[in-house]
Structures are given as structure tokens and as C-alpha cells.
Amino acid sequence: MSEAFLELERVNVWRGDEAQVAALSEVTMTLRTGESVAVLGPNGSGKSTLLKLLTGALRPEVRDASSCRLFGEEHWSIDDLRHRIGVVMPEEVARFDPLEEAFDVVLSAFRGAYGRTRDMRFSKKERVAASRAVDRMGITSLISREYGALSSGERRRFLIARALAHDPEVLVLDEPSTALDFAAATELSMTLRELIGSGHTLVLVTHDPGEIPPEIGRVVMLRNGSVLADGSPRRLLRSERLSELYGLPLKARWSRGWCEVRARE
Image 1 (spheres, one colour):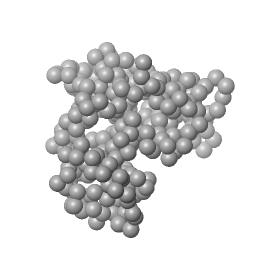
Image 2 (cartoon, rainbow, N blue to C red; image 1 turned 120 degrees about the vertical axis):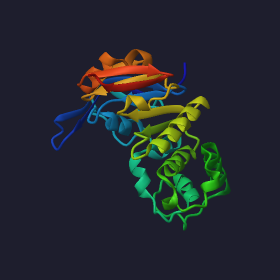
Image 3 (cartoon, rainbow, N blue to C red; image 1 turned 135 degrees about the vertical axis):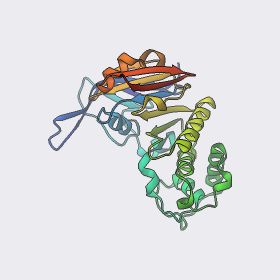
Image 4 (cartoon, rainbow, N blue to C red; image 1 turned 45 degrees about the horizontal axis):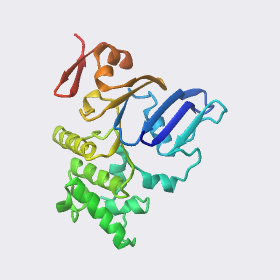
């Protein structure tokens, strides 16, 4: 059996000024390398909180009955996790200077930095690794362009290359198609399918079932901070389950491995 990179046992995370609202409540879950998982749920379901647990940015309530392990450890270093987990978040798009050279955006992964990197020094090994990530994303011809001159889809591809620069064991994408037009979202979807097909362990965090590519083998549904369901896409992405998840009547239809969802008339 492959290694577990996230193990949650009856985990609680609280939010609010007086920590009275459960962002996650009694969540038990194990994610393993070698599998690709979609974490699906509406806004406020706990997806962002789960993502922060996964990346080590947040720790749960400490109590005897619960545990949270990343790569088998209850105590971890953020620097170590940065090398083992690559993360792409929508807000990262705006964190770079528009005048930044696109290749430098990828190189910045080795300093955990955002913004201009022209005064930073990078080793030959780091440059080779960044070039390899750029090649993998098929954007080598764009590396000398200014970041701000790239299309929204191209910028998203450079951010994925940045996340891949360390050759991480796990790649996490949070709402990856946010602010992308149809063409860019379609290209991104093809990229995700290629990444999964090439053996990457992928965690896709989304509110849209239609974003989940056919190569995803598992769906975890979150609602109100709890796991509503956990299983195969074919079993869970059905009209009844999705209607329960989103709290409104929905109709799901499968076409060529994709789940299409509409409001029920």
C-alpha cells in the first residue's frame, strides 16, 4: 500500500473570534501518494481549512481523541513540506510583479518568495529543475516574456510549473479554473489530465463537479465542515448526492467520463 501523506483522525478546527464555529468537525480521512482526489463542496464547506491542514499552514484542536499527521509525522517543518507538496492557489496570480520575467516566477519557488526575484541568485541545479518544470508544462517558448503580458491561462501554467519545480510528491490545486475564460479553462483541464496520466499525485479542491477530470479516482464531499461522502466519482457524482451536498435540486449526467450538472427543472 502506498504511503499516506495526510492522516486525519476525528479532527476539529474552530474559527471565529471566540472559536465557536467548527470549520472542520470530527473529520477522519486518509490521502495516499499515487492516488488523485477531488475535494468537492460549496463555499464554507471546509475546503480551505482542509487545504491549510494539508499544507501545514494550520494545526487542529489538540485533544487525546484526535490526530493529524503529514507524511507520518505529527510535527513538521513548513520548509520540508514546501519541498514535498506543491500548491497552486488562485490568489497567487496577483502576487507577482507584472514586469517579472516569467521564468523568474518559476525560480521563486526555491526561495518561497513572491514579487521580483531579479536580485536573487539561483544555483545551476535550481535553474535546471525550473527548466524541467517549464518543459513539463509546455511553456518553454514563453519564459522570457513579462509575467503581466501573459494570458490568464499562461500565467496559471507558470504557477503550476512553479509548484512542480521542487518535484513534489503531491500537487495541490485550489479552484484552478478561477477567473479563466472557457479556452484557458479547457487547456488547464488538459494539463491536469496529463499530470495525472504521468503519475503525479493530485489533490484538486473545487466547488464545481464539472471540473473533475475522468482520471480522478476518488471524491471527498465536504459540507458544513464534515465529510458527507467519500468514494468513487461514479458512485458520488449523482443527482441525489449532489442535491444533498449543495442543498438544491440538481440533475447529473455523465458524458465521456465527465459529470455535467444542471438545476433540475
